[in-house]
Image (cartoon, rainbow over the protein chains, first blue to last red):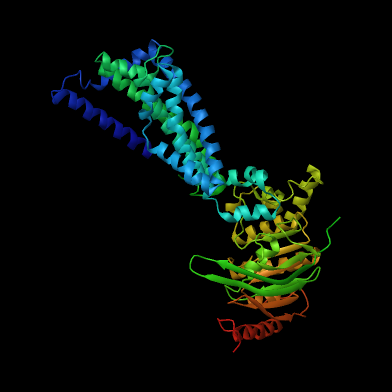
Length: 257
Length: 260
């Protein structure tokens, strides 16, 4: 309760500073619109359905790309965790992919796929895979070796050991990897939507870019707020319950990351 | 229906570990026979190779020369007839107590689902943890964790139980209770047990025989038969007196492994 108040006060103060800046700094409202005009944009774009339909288009792309990226990343991550040779080859490639900002894939994607959904998906997948591979590999390799020894003496080897011991033991790390993958996918998609203009769906990134073209900063900032909110809701709704679940099972700390 | 206790034979086992800096001679021509139903304690200072020997018996490590046999059959890998209870409880945190005890049973095709559950329940009862069936492992005390580990190792009905310093991390009071419980359980379920420890009193309290090892290279030195009646109390004067004699013998081998 006290914490809720502190959060509310913090954001209220931020609004006051923002409003003050638009009033007294003499900046053009074209560059920095006051908070109420952003709020007005949000209200109107919500009422006429623009925001909702753009969000749905974006989330659909995100979920498809993220799903493919996570499944691929986890499979590759598990595979390379089983072999030092694969880790030092494919693992190095994945690390390189992770350090490459996903927007760098856009020129290539445009040449290969043109202005299509495929290009968009490609950027999201390439942006997600590397970080998931690395987190999965790291997690699987951090499992205390004693678990594998116990499994072996109990007659659990090979596939059975992976299903019943390695993957459950790595679960906290796998969820961290999925969470990281989500953050990367979200960033990648926004970059892709800003740069890939296509007619098959008008996502939040396009809405943002159109705001720039129309010089309506209230739209730009409004869409940015929506993007942040979706990110927050995903984090709290998708990953927090998992983390709480693991916190209960593993005891304190292990699932804190 | 219960498996008979198994016999273990160790014949001339040697083992070297190659590290980047040195070659460690962990075991040198070790031979030992453990009779079916016998409780043998291996005692020695750290570095004497006792845990390595246990690993070899478990089939987790292969010897460089010599061989180990379980009921006359060469040990070539881990087997469900020789289960290990480790120093750290090594319970699986993603399973509750019951799930942990079920772990070794889950793949046994000769049992129905009902039979597996019944066996797991019986073993939880054996270690006195029926009430904690649904509890997650991090909620248990150290002593309870080792009870679960014991139930987990006993449930698949192995012929031999290998115990790697199972009580080392526990406080003295908890340990004493577990000595009593382990003796009771062993009298009910006559398994062949080989227990590794550096605690001489613990060895005398539990074992039919106490086998001494010395390091550099790891060798078996002497064996003491313990004829005290069971259940034994670790604080009894007879036990303390024998433990003292064994400790004196242990101190007689200096760290280089040569006798003074």
